[in-house]
Each structure stands twice: as C-alpha cells, then as structure tokens.
Image 1 (tube, rainbow, N blue to C red):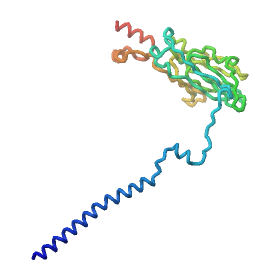
Image 2 (image 1 turned 180 degrees about the vertical axis):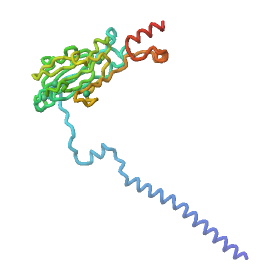
Image 3 (image 1 turned 120 degrees about the horizontal axis):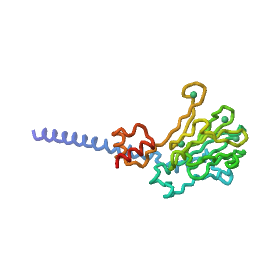
Image 4 (image 1 turned 90 degrees about the vertical axis):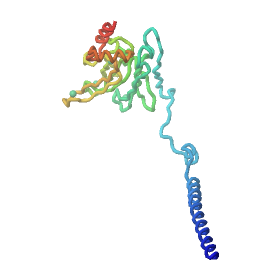
Length: 261
Ligand SMILES: [Ca+2]
Ligand SMILES: [Ca+2]
Ligand SMILES: [Ca+2]
Ligand SMILES: [Ca+2]
C-alpha cells in the first residue's frame, strides 16, 4: 500500500513538474522570439536610412535671389499711431499673396507679389530663371493700400491676363478698395476696379473668378474678413440678440455703441 501511494505521489509530482516546465517554457519561447523579431526589425531613423542608402537626386533646387532678381519681401512694421499693429487690427499678420501668370504671352510665367505695407511687385520672366522688376513702369501700385491676395484673370477676354488685388487693412472703408489692373498689352496696366464694379470696400483677403450662372461671363467671389474685429465678444453677442445687427456694417456698429452708453 505504501509502495503504491509512493508511486502515485511520484507520478503526480512528475506530472506537475512537466506542466510547470511547459508553462515556464511557453513565455520564455515568446520572449526569445520577441527579441529575435526586435533584432530583425529596422528601427533606424529616416535620416539614418538616407545616409546609408544611395544618394537620392534632389527634387527641388534653391535659386538665390541674387540669381533670380526676385528680391521682394513683405516687410511689416508695427505702428501704434496708424493702428497698424496686432492690437488694433486683428489681421495684421495674415500675410499677403503671390501669383504666377504669363502677362505678355511669351510662354514664360511672370510673378506678382502683393504686399501689406510696402509696394506690390511685378517681375517679368526673362528666361533662365532671371526676372526683371517692372512694377513702376507697369503702374501696378496705383491705388495701392493694404494689399492681400492677388488673382490673375482675363476679365475682358482680350487674350491678356489682368490682375485683381484684394485689399483690406486697418483703414477706413474707402481705403480698402480692391484694385483691378487691366492689361494694356504692352507691359502696362490701367486700374479700372470702379468701372467694372469690383472696388470692394470690405477687408478683402482673396478673390476668385468663375462663371456662376453659366452665361459666359466671369463672376467674382470676394472673401472678406469680419469688420467687427476687436469687438468684445460679449458686446457682439448682445448686438446680435438685440437685433441691432442685421448685417455686419460700420454704420450699424456705430448705432450699437451709442445704444450701449
Ligand atoms: Ca511672360
Ligand atoms: Ca484682359
Ligand atoms: Ca476690399
Ligand atoms: Ca456669369
């Protein structure tokens, strides 16, 4: 009897031992396999890969302004007295625009840079990535105030691309007129926004032209910023709820301020 019990006990111990071995071996095997996977996994950074691989040809090449003559800079200067600062004009650092189009139909893209405070620039492409500043003789700064976006469009369909400049800065409404420069076909332009009904007085950021009603004539969409910039949001909320604002406009804004007093 004692012998039988001992034999059974030994069998049980052996079984438990084998079970433990299996249980212990399984995690160990997983750990080893994991380590092997990690070792084989490529964890090098993109920079390391590039340095170790063959040299990849550059997609872009930087052309210096000395080489291209494109020296435009949208220089911003803060000024407390003229309201030209972020605290008086929310859109002070919105930036300006750039457009590329062939203004003289020679197959080379010319460049127009719009500027907030400094003058706009028009560069004629002379080939081989050389440009010539023709801003002054082209007359593209007549009526220039605070320019933002620039859009090329052949608005009179004469085969010469015209230029529409969206304007809107810390000025009175009449100093925010957008400008339309009609291409005279000889590298000069004539400003005709009023004549075309496009002298928008809002704080214009950018514009686009498309034929909205499919009548064959281009229509214009002007994107303007809110003229109530700087207004206390609580006052703005009251203005809307009191019905004082039916549309955002300077006149209604003045009426509301009067009512608050
Ligand atoms: Ca050209
Ligand atoms: Ca034209
Ligand atoms: Ca405007
Ligand atoms: Ca139309």
